[in-house]
Amino acid sequence: MNKLPQLTRREQDVLGVLCEPLNHGGAFVEPASIRQIADALGVSDAAVKQHLIHLYDKFGIFEGEARRRVRLANLAFGAGAGRCARDVPTPEGPAAEHLMAGRAAARARNWPRAFELLSLADQSGMALSPEDLEALGEAAMITSRHDRSVEARQRAHAIYVRDGEVLRAAMVELALVFNYAGRLDFVQASAWFSKAARGLADVQPERAHGYLAVTEALFKLGGGDVDGALALARQAHAVGDQFGDADLQALGLAFQGQALAQMGQMDQAAPLLDEAMASATCGELGPLATGLVYCRTLCACLDAFDYCRAREWTKVIDRAAEDHCMSGFSGDCRAHRASIFSLRGDWVDAEREAEIACAEKERIDLSHSAIANYEVGMIRLRRGDLEEASARFQRVHELGVSPQPGLALLLVERDERDAATASIRTAVEETPPNSLRRARLLMAQVEIAALVGNAALAQAAAYDLNRIVSSQSSFALKAFAKGATGIAALTDGDAAAALGPLREACQLWLRASAPYEAARIRMHLASALCKLDDEASAGLELDAARAVFERLDASPDIARAMAAKERSRKGFSEYGKQTGHNPLPQRK
Image 1 (tube, rainbow, N blue to C red):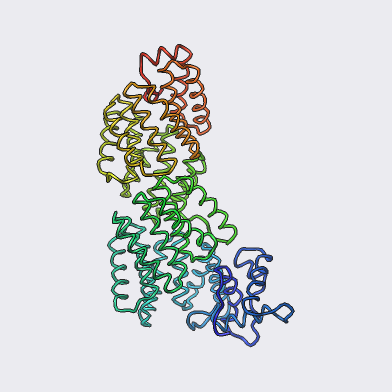
Image 2: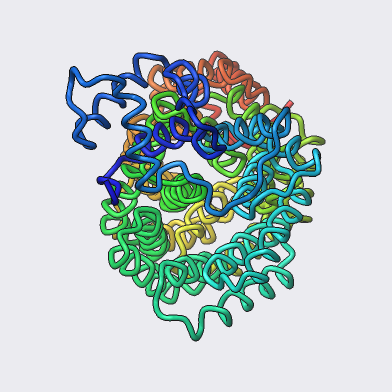
């Protein structure tokens, strides 16, 4: 057989480990056993046997033939499976064992083990191939060892340049772009991107050009050039189609989806993101593409407030990590996962995931460290730990990311109302008018305006929020809009007009599985009912809200709910008429 049949990513992994011993010569070399393949890939013997059955069929090795596994290895190795990319003398002894085991661990995406073993092989003094150095650089990157990753990749790059391998050199240059961008070192990132672009300028179209387009699309998204990012993502997908590159196809889809989501076109974005995720979660993609597709999809869903889709994909990613022996969430995805856990009321899990992400990403990806720190800050704020919340928001700001609306809400809890009003106003004014991110800021502005009794500001912010949300379909965005409308009506003294929107907002948050947000709306709903002399219904809403706050240990909100309930016992109706509706300001 001169050509490999079409194989799944997992079948390639199995063949790679099966054929690994054949790389090192000898007269009668046995391929890896079923047990060795299972150990290397972290799966059961039964799973390996099932993959081998499919491989025997694809290679035309029929049941009953003698030594089928050996024949499969020889046929596959002859067609190029499992071969070292170049002839590098492999010494006998521990160094060779470390190298072979390290390669197998990298194929299995066991990155901590791959880093350990490949480092041991490297430290033995043996000359690693550039492919092995790339694997070491990848393992170091994923296990948050920035300097080691850069060093290994630069060594691989030097060998490719020496040997005149322009395309391979360009791929390493693009990998180094991600190394430096993660550390917010955009000068170095730009330099390596320019090297890749210049090296590929006079080369006939190849897969590397698609990866160049993907990398540029990522930075255009970060810089706000959504149209430019969308065009580049489509270009990358076309290159992937041309060369049959599954990684490029999926990345092109994911980046198109994120660009469309940022444009507010989630209905068009969702099918593209879902298709990319289907490829990633079934193990069809390489590690870089898998991680980027995960991250871009979760990021797009959270940016578009499509919490239901984000939550479903987190479940699928967890299952995929088990089914395909993938590492699941890396630090960047952990940061997004913490956001999802926080929304659904799993604050303990959310803080744990965010703290892990902070620890991992402080060393290699500062923008995602900012996201994780923000999530911890919001949880601490809601639990009344204002000092730690302030420290986290300060760190977010230091990393170049806006800590809003968390910072403004922190000022509310400190009873610095004028400062809170000014802070959220600045944040809203600095955000593009049609940006979905503006929705969260406007919701905070409505609540702060209600707190200080500024009905005109509350109405204006609610109107702006409804304008943004009018063409969107997510439960969360609609809940923001309905909640803002109801709170603004209450601030203007019209409890009857507030009742309907607040009830709708509460139901929408419950459908979005966001218990804390639903409970906060219940507090406003209780105020409206109080003002309408419906003491019994107001009490039900307060009891429901308090139950959620107690489960979450949201101490400031617990205090507010208890104070409101106590006022109910003393004459809730009269209190509502005399003091107004807003339950937020009193905090004891």
